Amino acid sequence: MEAKLVLKSPAIITRRRTERGFVEPLDHVPGSMLRGAILTSLFRSGRLSREDLKREAEKPSLLASPAYPIVRGAKSLPATPFMFYCRKCNSIIDVTRESSEALSHNKELKLSLTCEKCGEPLKSLYGYIVAKSGNRVERIRVRTFRSTSVAIDKGRGSAMTGMLFDYEAIAEGTEFWAWVLAPEWLQADKMEVAVGRGSSRGFGWAELELREAQHTSQWLKAGQGGFVAISPLSPLKRIEWEGSTLTMTKVFGRTFRLQAGWDFVRGFRPIVELVKSGSMVLARASGDAIATLLHVGLPVKSGDSWLTGINVLLSIDEYYKLLGG
Ligand SMILES: [Zn+2]
Image (cartoon, rainbow, N blue to C red):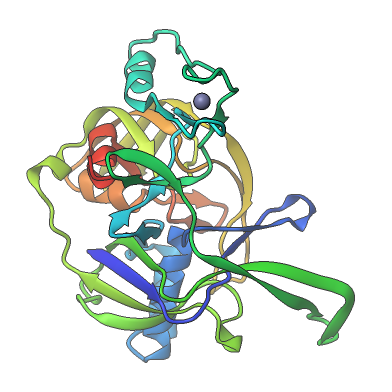
């Protein structure tokens, strides 16, 4: 299904890293967070029981891709490591296709580090989100504002001295798009969900609309070649899920350590090493449901729990089709 998420109140969406407890504001809703938001909403409204949630934790059947902002009607996506910009003349250099070709033919990558027009050192767009504006790709920013919050000591229930946190909140009205693999108990529908921090203080309330996805034959081609991971990627050689297989031969991107999402049944947070969204992957994909699974990501087991919302892959053609060109 295709999901549209519209923020009804500002959302504080962060990823807490393990090293030094650094909190990073995000410009998108991670797939695991979107999945959790749907499950929580269904549980609150009595449509799912605690038993159902336990079953979902043991073997996920609801899967979701990350949700990226829609900017002036255009879908945004994470930039690849082969997109650059020049701060001086505002040029965008996108060599994603060429680089994918070179990588798959084992050729050397020729990446220019300076701007052809003005000679300035180029900056990487990898790590940011981009959308099509006119006929060129542009870095986009979501509308945010700063919000300051006091850290609460959970043990004592009181405010901790000197622990003021600055949060970046995404403005209400911001729209996001995502894909959701829905089990039979989840119908096309509208529901109220909460994403990010502070939902009890009114932050992150959103309307989620689920519609049947329009799949064209072009979407269903998976096969072999270059893909862009539009979510974090678990750098494994082989991932299997329900009879579908993803075999990765090369991954081009930066790794980071992530404290994975809250497991709402066990209260356990696994720590994993993942590759940052936007990475380029050479892979072979097979299985009856693989085209759908690549859009919501193949889950990977970490300790006792499943990591979801990762390994969402688009072929290079799909990636540019979504960007609108
Ligand atoms: Zn330039």
